Every structure is written in structure tokens, then in C-alpha cells.
Image (tube, rainbow, N blue to C red):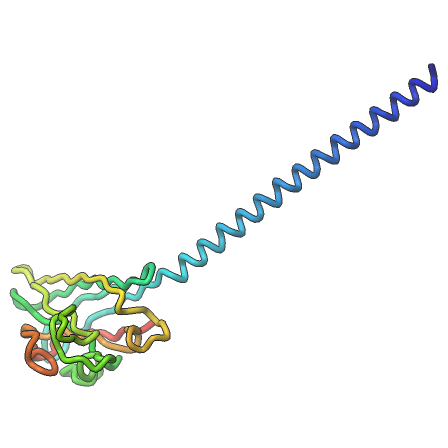
Length: 201
């Protein structure tokens, strides 16, 4: 009888130890899965942060204008969206372009150079089969309150990438007093440069 009690006690001890070990293994596995999930979530967040970039550009007056405003460029999933709000212009249509140099130092804005045209195309309306500059944004309308807005999205721009035909960093936004006729070369006869903003990281 004594031997039976000892054997029974030994069996209970083995069963208890086995259960504890299985519980520990299960807990370790769950912890491992949680850590792997946290790591995967962090990697996904990091990747999203890399893919989404944003620049805010202040626009300054040129040629004696009263212009003010800002433009925001956001890159997400291979596309760049530009949203600009421009104030201080006369009611009606005005032209806006991206120019080749990140330099707004000249009082008349000419330090920004000509239109950004890395692919050597003729000036034209954005998307025209006959050709257009990568900086040919076009015209926007200023309302009677003196405020105009511009918005466009394209996969032909990027923010800080290595493709010189797409990278808008190191360029400038120019606002013109006149209207782009989409025909006159090389700039659409858009007239005086009344606003400028450097596109930089």
C-alpha cells in the first residue's frame, strides 16, 4: 500500500510538471506570435511613413504684387498631390508653373529660370499628346474675394526620388499675373511673375 502511494504521488508530480511545461510552451508561443505581430505592424507603419511624404511651400510676392499663400505637395502610393491657395491677385484666371531653379531671390522672380522641362518637350497644356513640360500646371481662377485654389494629382512627379525627370525638389513654383495660352513657346505668354516659392525638403 505504501509503495502504491509513492507511485501515485510520483505520477501526480509528473502530470503536474507536464501540464506546467505545456502551459509555459503555449505561453511562450503566444508571446512569440504577439511579438512577431508587433514587429510586422511596426514595419508596416514605417513603410507607410516612407511612402507618404509632404512638403509645405510658402509663396512670396514678386514684381510689387500683394500675393501670399502656400502650396502643399503630398506623395502617397506613387502619386503626388499639389494643393495651393493663393491670395492677393485680381479676379480672373492666372497661370501657375513649376520652374527649373529653387531660387526666388530676384525681385521679379526671374532667378527661378524657365519652366521645369526635364524631358525636352514643347510647352503645352498638361496631358497634351503634342507635348508639355513637367512644370506646366496651367491656369487657376481667382474669385472676387481675391483667393484662388489649385489642386492636381499626378504620377509624373515625386518628392526627393532619384529620378531627375520626376523629382520636384530643388525647383520653384511661379505664379503669373497673366493667363497661359498653352501655345506660345516656351512659356505660354503668361506674363509677369507675381509669386514665387522654393520647393525644398
